[in-house]
Image (cartoon, rainbow, N blue to C red; front, side):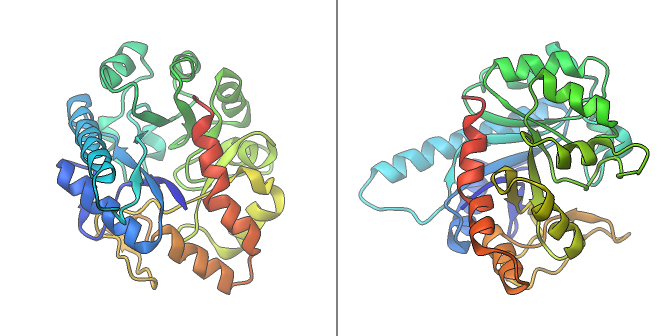
Length: 290
């Protein structure tokens, strides 16, 4: 299994992380049954995001050396980073810090990833921002897989992002314009475009079960990506209590990927489709930008 969207787990996360924190996070993911992860960096001021990216890069270096040694680590392999921001829409901030969001600027993007181009694998961006389509083209041209999310985009704005080079949707239905019968928006575009990949958080809290059923009925099974979106407070236990703030707002996913799959299997979802959404699909998705 490959989890392309996970911020943390069991007391560790990417925010303010040391390389040891990232390695501990990978170890917990590996113990849960995940083969590879893309540690996901929260939107923050550029200097803070760069520090977090640097911690991931150092953890990758340490992990490579350990894997080349006599022992074989059970940890999930760290395959790079997913940047969730900072080019996002404050109207759909979700649990992210809207004060850290930036206009869609090529200059800011280049400052953010300078020296890290080899490990930035996915970036989430809101395609409706002024200048976003040009920035998406720049990202895609650098070999990054671009995902659209934390967005108030209309159908046409999402389609413009796709035409510019975006190929995914970050946690569909969460932190984005709601589907409306006269304006299907980014969620409607995600469901109907056969070439777009969609992330699905399959814990008990982010999506109603019937919504998950809708996604699996409408989307090509080869374009669904199961993700955990777990955070520091997320538990490894299968029951997956909701991770919320004092106001009851969801802060992240409640369970690792294997537990989500076990849950959906028990509810009658197709095993082959679930396995594909957690293994082959994310592997292929990560190859888009290469």
